[in-house]
Length: 196
Image 1 (cartoon, rainbow, N blue to C red):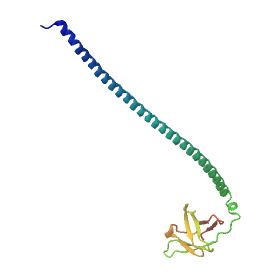
Image 2 (image 1 turned 180 degrees about the vertical axis):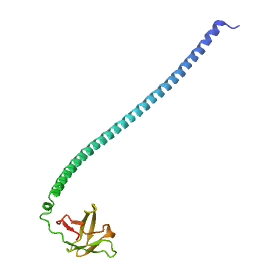
Image 3 (image 1 turned 30 degrees about the vertical axis):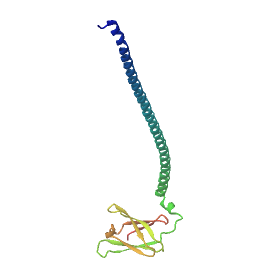
Image 4 (image 1 turned 30 degrees about the horizontal axis):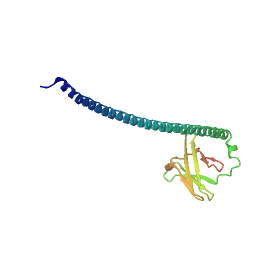
């Protein structure tokens, strides 16, 4: 017959080895979980440092962009102030010129241009014959005004040295007796005539 005391004594080492085995596997699983947690923490720290570095670079770029914008704004303000001073100077010069045109032209040579009028070949008013008596190419502003009809126009014309130019109805103005004509060039006195 089996002895109950001897039986329970022989089962004890088997149950102790089972408990030891359970603790062994439990410690392995715990160590694996701890390693995974540590690896996750390291990965999270790396990602966090990368995000922080990226945020720092982004902030530096924004600061540089802001500095550039502020510098551009300062330069624009300086250019605007300079443009306003130039506009005031030109406005002052124009008001002086409008007050006394003869004084503005003082000291300038006479415009080397002669103007005569002839009847149009097509029977539409008069044609101005503008002759450049100099040997230089002239770009002129032609201003015409009809005081009767209260109409006025400005044209830019170009005349080669020693050449003449016909200007009439086909070019934008049909001259009539009494029209006021002005020819302007920055380097010469203005030439003002009235159509006979």
